[in-house]
Image (cartoon, rainbow, N blue to C red; front, top):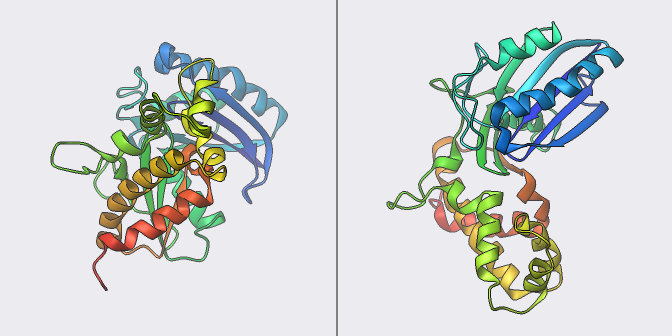
Length: 276
């Protein structure tokens, strides 16, 4: 028997059929039409899932949603990125669509669980996950089980304040926030990053040029990466002091910057930690 996994984010929707060992049988990636809100995204999901059900023997569906949810009922609390999800009974809707058992969780929580059981966190007792996509989310797994706390219980590291003014991690380190940083920084500048951004036909997605610019030795790209990594390290220091995870796993679209981002975060973090 196979299973269907659905990820609902602010930028993309991913729908896969796969086996319990993590093998994908079929994958679909769709751009989220934010202008059409939650109803439009549900239409996109409904256009793909019945075909997967017909082609595979599906036993259950797991959904990761980009916002606070009640995993017991599958009801959405709200979305911070896309309108039209407030108090929506997503679990019931997917059950009606598929006719099989459905589990709904926050998307960062299921990503944390996947990394803890099948990915970079495998073999560690306490795994903390941070996701940097259109928003910034977090999740923590202890001894193979998600930590929830009071419901809706996500590890909302993206909403930690970076200072007393109210600036939060998501304001500084989400993909959209880094895109804004880059757009502002390249005005009147020359170099690899400025040239790459200037060649874009439309605004958005500027952070995809960061890795190439860093590899080319662009000092502006290195400065932006250092600032983002420092903000992330400061936020993660709170998670480290509170929970003492054995490993921190970094994911999401911005993590495609790769090793330069990981190394910069690892270098910045110790300065914000107690000596022990």
